[in-house]
Each structure stands twice: as C-alpha cells, then as structure tokens.
Image 1: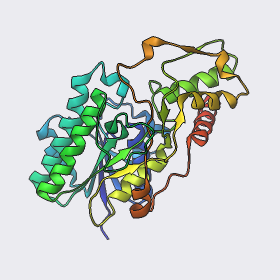
Image 2 (image 1 turned 90 degrees about the vertical axis):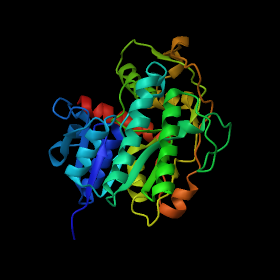
Image 3 (image 1 turned 120 degrees about the vertical axis):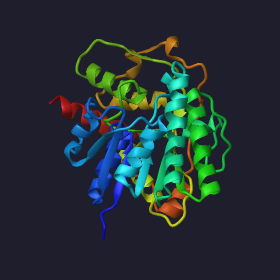
Length: 322
C-alpha cells in the first residue's frame, strides 16, 4: 500500500506541530510549509523532537502560483490548512493582514486543488469565534455566524469559501469549527500561557503581578493534542462535512486563574491586577460548543477539560525549567 502524504500549512504552530507528530505516528509522509522554511526556527517541531522527520518547504499562501507549485511538487493526499494570523486580540491591530493570511490563503489552496483536479482531501481550520456572542447556548454546526472581531470575520469568510468549493466543484473539503484549545506550545501572547507562566513565576517566589483584562468571560477550553486527531478523522470519512470540536463545558477565565494558582497553594487575588488597556473593542461573554456530531460520526470525544489542561501545562512548564 502506498504511503499517504500530508501537506500541513502552518506546521510551525501549535496545532500544526501536534498534527505532524500524530500523522507521523500514523505512518504518513509529512510535508510542512512556512513562509520561510530556511529561516524559521521551527521551535515547536524541535520541542516535539520531530523536525528531522518532516520535509519543510517555503510557501506564500497569498500567492496562487506559490501554492500551485507546492501542490504539484508534493502531490499530497491530504492538505491541512492551519496557517494564518492566529490571535483574536492581534487581529484588531492587523485586520488587513489577518483577512489576507486566512481568507486569501484558504481560497488559493481551494482553487489550486480545483485547478489540478487531484483527488486531494482538504481540511480547513475554522473557529468558534465565528459564532460571536450567542449567550449561554452551546453552538453547533447550524448555529448562525455573527463574527465580532477581524479574526472571526476572516475565519467566517474562509469557512464559506470551503462550503462553496465543496458544493460547486465536489471537492472533499471540510472545516473543523474548533473551540479554544491549549497546550505547552501556545505562544506567550495567548492568555492561558500568560497565566500559566505568571503562576509558575509567582509560585517560585517572584513578586510580579499578573495583569489581565476581562476575567468574567467564559470559554470552552480543550487540549490541543486531542483536537488534531479530530482533524485527521474528518478526512477519513466517506463524505466531507463540517464539525464543531469542543469539550461541551465552559469555565470563567477567573476559574482558570484560580486553578493555576491553586497548584501552588496561592490565593490568586493577591497577585492579579485588572488592566483596562487589555480589554478588546468587542469580546464574547460566553463561548461553548456542542460536539455531539463529532462524537456520533467521528467517534471523537474530548477526554480533558480545563482543570486537567491547567495542570498539564504547569507541569510541562516546570519540567522544561529543570
């Protein structure tokens, strides 16, 4: 049997790195792209010890010719599009780059697949941010989109591009609408990693204070290594479809902070400062997903929830310092 080939766009990020490791363990040949594969440090691939097992290529996803060339060179069976500007907060400062890197990149991949006519299965990284503020309801695949950030607008655009190419051209293309998911590979600009880092420093005797914006928001936090398995499962089905990937449980950011400081037997309220400059122009009060379709069709269900994730992230942080 011929070895399957996967192309992961955005292989250097959290999800791309875990997905690469997962696919390597499945026996895939894995090719990963970056804007500059010669200069990128691929820190996460090194962290997971898999950099040498992946073919790394430079691709500009906003350039159709560049995308077409890599498809013809690699001839992948599956493409996982995890590239693009990934921070909601940063998207308010970089709205044009966010839209171009997510929406134009996705469109170029879809059009290149259509142009080549190859039987490539395509996964697109959607986002729970597309749903917007839907109150205390669990969002599922048919919940309307009401994006409230440039990032969510870009992800919504990409989602409908995928749906359009699936329906108009019969492409095997699907989107995973993923809710928040974290791991030790999250960059420090993400609030979860910021909290974990501060809790570890303060637990080690540092006098610093943790500055946060709105801590009453609720999020459905999952474990990234589990979520990449759901991406893989979507492309193993007979028919393409979109899936909400979530734990089904939401927690306040305040609860996550308390959980992190509890690990060190510290009262978080003595160390956290509210900083109004960290508030976003618009934010979602509550975000929760209903992953019942993924459970029913993919056989996928999250095993870890927020308290487990905080513990695993803290222990990973402490172990890397030894």
